[in-house]
Image (cartoon, rainbow over all chains, first blue to last red; front, side, top):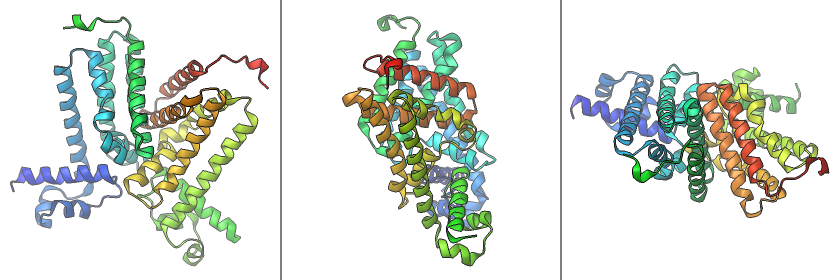
Length: 197
Length: 197
């Protein structure tokens, strides 16, 4: 196992445990046990759970940036991109019903712990806010772009929390339909999709 | 200090710590330290953190039932009652910006831990859902009453998560205005408030 592979394995295992159980409920030993490497090898890469947490946040931030970049490149226009974001709650519904939203739950947990990495975790939420704001600006929402972005982000967090509490797929689908209807209602001018480049 | 007072003090201290830091991040010793009583006296009331958790959930459930009963008795009609619920996010905004929603965060945390009391914690969320459903039924929303209830509950959870992440009071106020506008739009017939009993 090469150094970078081992490091990546540790980060992936911790990412999964932090998501599945929470940060406080996952110990350094839990992560070591999940990766099954010697203590010496483990310490070569990380000395504390907080070092691993920082690496997990970096990884999540990088993964989300890649995802948004794919949508930026592949989706026809801003409305379709926002729809891609909205539909994550359906694409990831099994995971969300089991563990909630990975971004929202970590942000909440670290803020409550007043943890040194809480601002760093917030960067993922801010990444979504800023990306959504750009989409609403492109859609022509001008000064309302950021509040629309926060509305969609807030919507996604609420849906994730209720989906986890009640495991109701019908609820998720209805909420997606409603927010897409809202999205259509806040577009300043109805664009003809066939004419979009 | 009488027995019931001591027990209540322990439950109140645990309630506050579970809300402020989270369940997993609060130890039995943290609760004992917050109450400042002898270990013997403490053990007379509770032997494990999970016993305290159950008592905290019971207390929270009781407190919410009382709050809803007050609204049932004092608010003029169902629309005003739903508005009371919506405005909790403003009334409690300082706490919510610091720690999130006490109901949502505990439900999420216990579900992720697959904790034995997760269903019990969910009862608080279900209490709000059922109460809101009754209000929407009274409003004349018929078969859509429960989905409207889930929409409002989901909205409140999203607002709490974003309020905690970004500490933006303007966002909270805008979201309250928007959901009240939505509430008005789903009322089957515009009632004349002056005629309501």
